[in-house]
Length: 294
Ligand code: MN
Image (cartoon, rainbow, N blue to C red):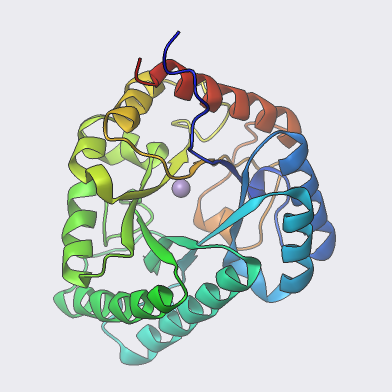
C-alpha cells in the first residue's frame, strides 16, 4: 500500500480525560497515563494553572517524551469581549499569564476561547467588545511571536460564546487581528452544532488551520455518536493538515472546578479515562491511516 509512512500529526489528549485539576498528583497521573496510552501530546486547560508546579510539570513531560499544548477560556469578570475596560484588562492579564505558563511548559500552542468567557451570553457581541478582542489578541499575538508561539482561535458553539461560532466568523476575526501566528482551531463537537457539515469548514480554513479537537457529538467515546469522522479526516488530509489532533472528552466522572460547570458536563459518559483514551488513540490513528493519500 502506498502512503503507509507514519503521519506527522501529533495525536494529543486533553488532561481532563485523566484528572480535573493541575495539582502535583493530578499532573503526575495525567502525564503517566498520556504516555501509557500512546499519545504524543498532552493538552492542559489552564483554568486553574495557579496550582501548577510548572517546572516540575515540564520535567515530567520531557522525561515522558511528550509534547504539550495549553488551552483556556476566559470568565465573565475577565472577558476581553466586554465593553468595560476593567473587565477587558483582567481578561488580558489572564491571557498574558497563560501565554507565559505555556511557554514555560515548553509548549508552542496556546488555544481555546481566548476571546471570551465560556458560557451563555444573553446578547450578541457588541461592536466595542469585538474591537477589544481584536486589540487584545493583536497584542498577545505580538508577544507570542517573540516566543515563537502560535495562538489558536477555537470556534465554540452559541451556548459557550457569542464571538465566533463558525469557521467563517473565525477567519474574519483572524483577518482583523492580522497576525500570521493566529490560527484557526476546529472542534468537531462544536462544528456539529453550528456548521453545515464537517467538511466545508475544513476547506474554508485550509492552511490557516492550526489545531484540531476531536470530540463526539456528546463528548463521549469516539464512534459512539453520529459524527461523520471519515468525512472530517478526509478533509484534513485534503488540505494537508499536519498539526496536532487532540482528543477531547468530558464526563462527570472527572470533575474540574469551574470548567465542568462552564461546559455543562452533567452526564456520566464514561468512568475509565484510561480505557477511553486507548480507544480514542486507536480511533484517531485508524482514521488518519484510512484517510492518507494513496
Ligand atoms: Mn474543544
